[in-house]
Image 1: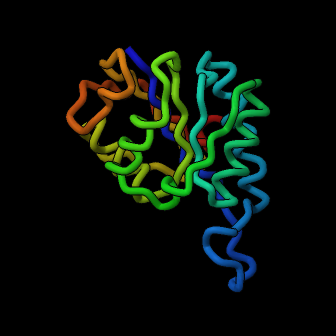
Image 2: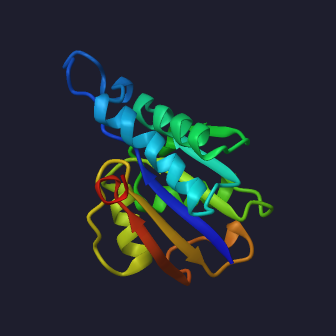
Length: 164
């Protein structure tokens, strides 16, 4: 059994319309909710064994804040392929970049791919706001077996407004 956690990046700034989408930073609310979700991982006993994040500034900064506040000590692996990735791409990247020694994986990415993957794995549509976190128990022993149709159980969806 493995634990897959899907974290949508925290709220980003649209203040400067000249900034390319990939380079948009977190806004004030995002800088507050990202650490909040990191503390939640710690208090819920969900500190990941590995963090894979999109290279987008807002996702990277979310991953860093979450890692710091959860006391995660491993690397944050930044993958360009997670930027605006589809649900299928998120699964394939998790499958190919996660060692079997990792029991808990945290993927930090973007909608609509994250929300779509939550729906595919849980069988129901969940509202998935910025800094939303979905935790799944996945019925696999090896990450290479992570694919569409895999046995999965949605443990919980954490939303910042309900958390802090």
